[in-house]
Image (cartoon, rainbow, N blue to C red):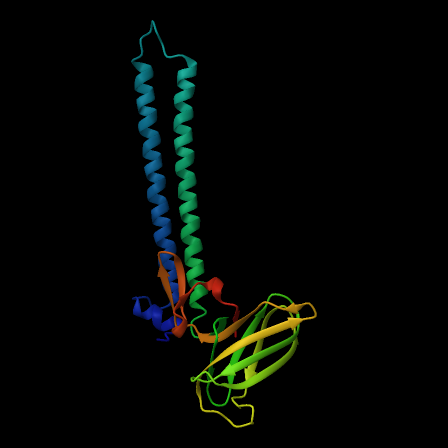
Length: 234
């Protein structure tokens, strides 16, 4: 289902996305403060232990400077690692929050990604071609649900990368076809022969899902994809 950002924020108990983001920052700050306090307690306990050890050492066999320096170095190392972990955790939380906000802005937008379907509606269908390198000749063959070829689009020469096209929904005889789902096949060539080409289909971002493998976008028929799978946002 399609849900705009404001509605999604309201459904989670926040009046706005800004309120949600402020709550995330506050939680991160609280976590950081708690970790800092724990580190400070650890240092205090260590120093008390070291002071007691020095006070009660055998005057005839005192702790040498090397031992004292070694113990101080140990607590310094532990404290440094703890602070580094806290810093990294804060950075990761901030980065994840930023990625979620950026992904949420894509909800409702049309995108192109790998796929070989064309959705014809109101006499128009949008698709794309991803070329590995420039091609002097690019053709798109369109098939109906029975597998019959109904049209061939000659896109001519195209640059490397993403190239969009619009089909007017007419077959080779100029007859307007019924709205619905069609498939496409792309062929590209240059003077040296075939050029690697990937068909792209149009989809709508319906939502953002946080999974164990990272953020995913719900794009309907194509399921859940990573943000990196999106070729272009229209």
